[in-house]
Each structure stands twice: as structure tokens, then as C-alpha cells.
Amino acid sequence: MSDSKVRVRFAPSPTGPLHMGGVRTALFNYLFAKKNNGTFILRIEDTDQTRYVPGAEKYIIEALEWCGLNPDEKPGYSCGFGPYRQSERKDIYKTFAQKLISTGHAYYAFDTPEELDSKRKELEKDKKVFTYNAHTRSQMRNSLSLSEDEVTELLKGDYVIRFKMPDNETVEEEDIIRGKVSFNTRELDDKILFKSDGMPTYHLANVVDDHFMKISHVIRGEEWLPSLPLHILLYKSFGWNTPKFAHLPLILKPTGKGKLSKRDGDKAGFPVFPLQWKDPESGDISSGYREEGYFPEAFVNMLAMLGWNPGTEQEIFSMDELIELFSLERVNKSGARFDPEKTKWFNQQHLLRKTDRQLSVLFSKELDKRGIKADENFTEKVVSLVKERVSFVHEIWDQASFFFIAPVEYDPKVVKKRWKGDVPAFMKELAEKLNEVNEWKADKIKSYIAALIEEKGLGFGLVMNALRLALVGGGFGPDLMTIAEMIGKEETIQRIKNAVEKLG
Image 1 (tube, rainbow, N blue to C red):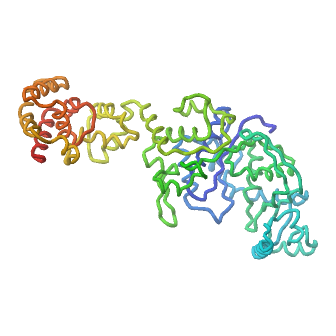
Image 2 (spheres, one colour):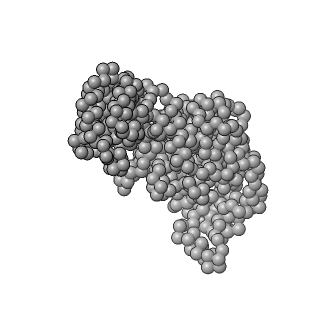
Image 3 (cartoon, rainbow, N blue to C red):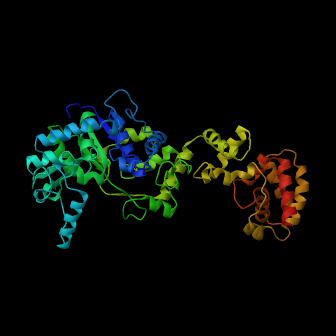
């Protein structure tokens, strides 16, 4: 590139929700741009109007915003090298398709779908595969095999423009991630560059756009690696400098075999999309990481570690830390296995990075949903007691609901194991005697109950587990005396009475 400034683009098609693999591609582009003081561009590649899905572009933009991957240039951006939707640039592409024809690098093709299918079936009978290339193009209906008059007449109807792939030429490129890659054009076909609907295919549009948007590095998924020789030859045909290429590894299924898909997520119960998606046709809803309660920074951290590593044991990073450490040279060539449980761990680690006040503010939203109003300081203390036990903010309620409401049900397994013998009678007496505790502090409460247990000759553990059952409804929770102190004397006594009344 003549311009040394780093300019990268994320160029999704609005054909549905953004897969987490697409988000990782956007992330690596973003990190590379920010690391090198460059520009991160969002371009919508909507040349295939037959696959366009309403709402998909809005979803893509919202998903990137949630992840903190805000483009420097994007659709609606009035400066720079826009417009940034390919459907708004279609007049540009035909000019360059015609230029390829005039220089002999492309040709008109008039074969109907039926004719192509017939040729394909004809070869299949001889167990051969049909490829539209240097060896078959002379047998097909195109401007290389027809007379000038025939071509002139046929141009009044439907046609496509195909790239004229050189025969038996080696195309080599130094991929930043994969090293030297080499292709022989004999194995490639004459790809369509311009369709009969007046729109370019991805191949022509992305090369033209990357050139005029001064893209310095093309960072994309490895599924585009087979298209690399065509793209390089297109740059060469136009006389343009090629950008540098980096092809990212696949994100693999949890089993490690094959590319991660929506079906894998549906089957195993984890999202593969950043945000929830409702299919506009079927109405089916696919879960999203945002709606599942993941922090965007945890989701991004997890994606960064799928295929990249900093060369150290560190796994938890903020966005700024990722930007500082990121390099394409440390991206792996091989696929990265997705681990749903490790993803939850990432969220837990980012949860623990937050202050108790930050978490209490987030948890207050969960309380609001349940119509519970609580003191900020009280909520903050509750969060500090249970945060180590959860991976998500919404799970705090499962671990701490008893701080806000009395239990109405009791774990039957704990009841059977702990509510027996002399314990129920002791609990009834305890409810009456706890009024004698003047200073309602955890250590004072514990000392008083311990003395009473010793006086009655009961087991300390048995009684304390029964008391926990009465206060929280099960056998879980933080320090029992801290719970009693926080819910207060009256509430503690009332809960013991409730348990005695309900459990006998």
C-alpha cells in the first residue's frame, strides 16, 4: 500500500444475526487497528439481495456497540470513503467489471441455469466434476466462444461477467498468520464477478471497495482462503497494490470436530450469537450472550482467547490490555475449540473484577424486577457476601434471596437430614430466648446460641444446620450469624417460628 496508515474493515452480510465467529473477526480487526493507531471500518456487504434479511444490519451495528467495537467509519458516516453499504455503491462496480472485459481479464457469459445444470449432469454421468474454466469455457455460451454479432444480440438479455482465470499459473501470497500460501489456477474456476441483476458478487465488490477505502490489511475468516488467489489476480488485473492478508482460524465445536454452529448451541444450551435474535419469518428466537447475563467485556475476552494468546499465562484482560498486547503473529493457524463452561468462567472473573458497589447497582435491577426496594449499603454488603459463589449477576438472587424475603419452602433433603430428634423442640425454645440477646451482632448471637446448645447437650453442627434451614430455606449461604445480624432480631425470630410451625 502506498499509504502506510493502518485501515481495516469488518464487512458482514446482512443475511441474519451475527455469529460469534463474525464478532471475533470484528474484534481482531478492531484490536489490530487500535494497536496501530489505525482506522476500523464497518462495511455492509449487501450485494446478494436475495439473501437480505430485514433487521440484520441493525442487529450487526447493535451487537458491535454492545461489545464496545465502535467503528471509526460506518454506514451513515458522511466523511471518509463512503458510502459504506455496497448496495449504495453499485454504479462503481459495473465500471470496473467493464474495465476487466476491455483488458481481457473477464468476459460475458450467457449460459442459462438450465444449460449449466445440463452440462453438470452430463459430466456427472462420466463421474467428472464440471468446472467453468479454461478447459470448458470454449464449450459454453460466452463472449469467448461466440461471434461478435451473437454477443451484441445476447447482451440485450440476461448475462453475467466472469473472471478469465489464467491456465496453470501459480499464485503465491505471504499470509500474516499462515505464512506462505500457494495456489495453482488450474484448480480454480472462472468466478462470476457481476450478476444479471446488476449487482456485483462479493469477489469484485470487496476488492474494489478495499482498494478505494485504502484498506491496508484484510483480516478475515479462513473460509475465504480459497478465494484469495482470485482476489490477488483481480488486484493484479486492475494494476493495484494488494493489501496484506491474514486468515483467522475457525471456531470449533466443543467436541473439537467441525465448525461451531447455531445447531451446536441449540443442542447443548448455549448461545452462538452476541444478542438475542428473532427470526422475522419464522418468529423463532435464538438466545444471545447479552440476554443470558454475560458482561460484554467477558464475552470479548473469551473471544480474544479463541485462537490468540499473549504468550503468557494471563487469561483475563480488559479491552485496553487486549489492545496493548494484541498481534496477528500470535494468532494460531489451527482451529480454536469453544468451551461453554470456560465462557462462564470468564464472566465470573470479570464479575469479581467489579467493585461491590458496581455489582450492587447491577443487582438492584434484579431486585426492581421483583418489586423489592432495598437500602444501597445493605445490598452492597449482601453482594460482597455471595459474589464468590456466582458467575452472573442474576444468580446473586438464587444465593441471597433470603436476605430480602423469608423462605416459604424448605429443601426436603435438608429437612430430612437436619430437622429431627430434639432439634425442633430446641428451635421452638430458641425463638423465645433470642429476645434476651441485647446486642444483635454476629459474635454475640453465636455466643448466646452456643451456650444454649451446650446447656441442652445437643450437637452444635446439627442445631446450626437446622437454624440455617429456618433462616434461608436450605443448606446454603454465607456465614449464618452474619445472616442473622443482617436480617435483624425480629425477622430471625419470626423465621424460626415459621419453620417450627411448618415443619413441626
